[in-house]
Image 1 (tube, rainbow, N blue to C red):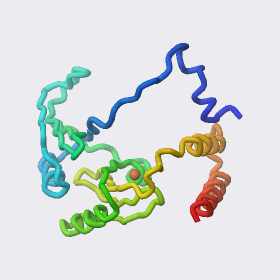
Image 2 (cartoon, rainbow, N blue to C red; image 1 turned 90 degrees about the vertical axis):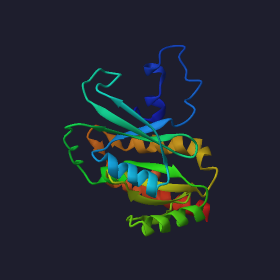
Image 3 (cartoon, helix red, strand yellow; image 1 turned 120 degrees about the horizontal axis):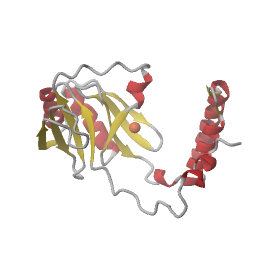
Length: 208
Ligand SMILES: [Fe+2]
């Protein structure tokens, strides 16, 4: 079997002597494009309760020199990480995704402190007229989902199992198994789905 995680992580792609010994300390910002700054500011300040802490203006993109005049907004979360947006001028709408799954899977999850907080936010958002999906109990986390005015899917979530980040061995073996179903032409879907279902049955039995 050549397409396993261990093979994918083999030394073939890592220059000798180079081993990652440190990791970045946390999320500084995540950035998206908006076509409606006013609606974005309203949503993230009035409804989400974030502070608009910085605005950057430029007529070119500093990293590349591209001539795209823009405003760059930063909204601050409680841990000082930020959610950022760019609005440029004369930018056509982004093309629609090739499959609706992209709108479900791509999302930004923000942390709350308890299940009660998630429930409180679900009510708060609905009172503001936001269409909220959930709460959903995922086993390890508890979440609600909704969309911002830009069509970005947001999640508010809290840990239910505080040790969920400690499943290192299971994560690696599950990843190897997932990759083993992947052939040159894509996943062997029927076998993959059967494996996922048996995997989830095992998980429920272990959890009782
Ligand atoms: Fe999520």
